[in-house]
Amino acid sequence: MESKSLKQLLAGVEHRIESGSDAVEIAALAYDSRECSPGTLFFCIPGYKVDGHEFVPEALARGASALIVERSVDAPEGVTVVRVTDSREAMGLISANYFGWPSRALNLVGVTGTNGKTSVAFLIDALHREQGKCSGLLGTVENRIGDEMAAVKRTTPEAFDLQALIARMVEKKCSAAIMEVSSHAVFLKRIAGCAFNAAIFTNLTQDHLDFHKDMDEYFAAKKELFTDYLSDEGVSLLNSDDPAAKIIANGAKGKTIRYAVIDPAAEVRAEKVKCTLDGISYTVVSTLAEPFDIESPLMGMFNVYNTLAMVAYGLSQGASAEIIARTLKSMNGVPGRFERINEGQPYRVFVDYAHTPDGLLNILRAAREICRGRLVVVFGAGGDRDRSKRPLMGAAAAQNADFVIVTSDNPRTEDASRIVDQITLGIEQALLKNSVPPSFKYIVEPDRFAAIRYAIENAQDDDVIIIAGKGHENYQIFKDRTIFFDDREVARNLIKERTAHGRHGS
Image (cartoon, rainbow, N blue to C red; front, top):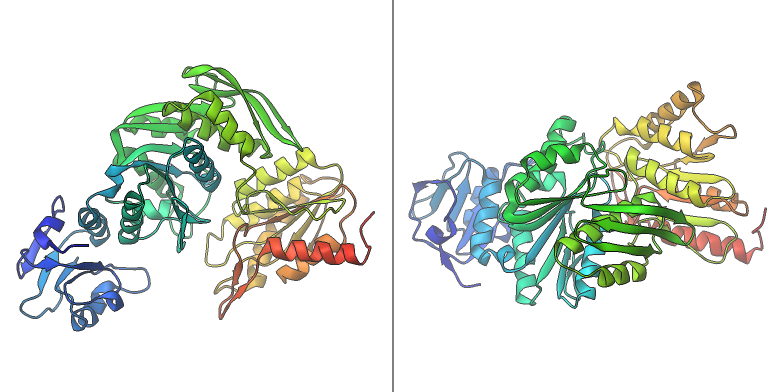
């Protein structure tokens, strides 16, 4: 990148020059002091564990020429210090200026909601590609720039990294991009400097209350995508079967298009819905097109909603019914989302990312629709995350499965046994209320490998086993280490091992 004057970079940013001059030339941006070099503009970001203001000496020692700060710092003569109210928001806007506002050079789509973001993002990316577009994808599972893969650090990258990725998309001639937008990303201003042409709302249920103080704050972050970042000419695509959609619609920018299975007033509806072992099917009835049929190998009612979000988006952008239907028929699935592990065994095994009460409930209901034997679920809950959802997940599992194996997920710095106890509290409460299947049983096996092995070793013909919580992840995080662990690989190897010893069958 060519250097730009600080004055150019501060365009549109409320600020005050505390010392130095905004005529200084900036060659690079950084929010990590270790990344600074001569000519760098360093952002002092107050974090939850460390404060970027404390790293000013290191940034200056490495050659930083200017600082973005929220409070006064000591800086030598010749270093420009710029005071702002919110250095995170400033970083987004300045990064957009630095890269020439790349989001304005393509059709940027954001998808938010508690569940379904990844699946909807993959489906829309597939539609873009089926249309022959060079497409970008930013999300939980992978970042992709055309056919080039990029590393994933978090669902939505920090503002500077995000703008750099979008700029690379523009450089690679991408004409469209789909981005998962987490509540963290909105709350922490990571999407500042992004201009969205379309925004999709999937649903709202409990999650991330370890970060947000309550559900109101969590929902407020979701709404901002539609009120603050969507362009006036853009489109809001809302699942109107979720009560939160009506509130979003009241303040959303641009045009609003609702999609639904139940709401008769929605502009895009799914009728004659069928969910089978072979997938889902329904008829699209819409004010935007003549009725047309959808068939997809994706399974479960939740995927009716995920695919319908893609249908609504496609119709809003002028895509033909034929190309939408063709895309959905050929889309086999998303990594770690109700992903089938099939080694020819007489029982079915699926791995899913479900890590919220509603997500677990949805996957178990979908599994029940195809289950001819027992429904078995292996799951835990992540440490250092929303504790209040753990008993709710236990209750959801007990009320919808025949056999539950409670295990470890990513305990992080927490005691895994305490997490398990909070899950089993919900199970026991469900038992006391007599709200579980008559044959319900559960065990606790804190070792995740042993828990999956138990499920597979004891599977009977026609059972369905759900291994939930980690999905596409290939690691397990403990207090003192992170190890390689992929539920899909573990399950596949254990199935093969059981097959090799001839132990399949009732």
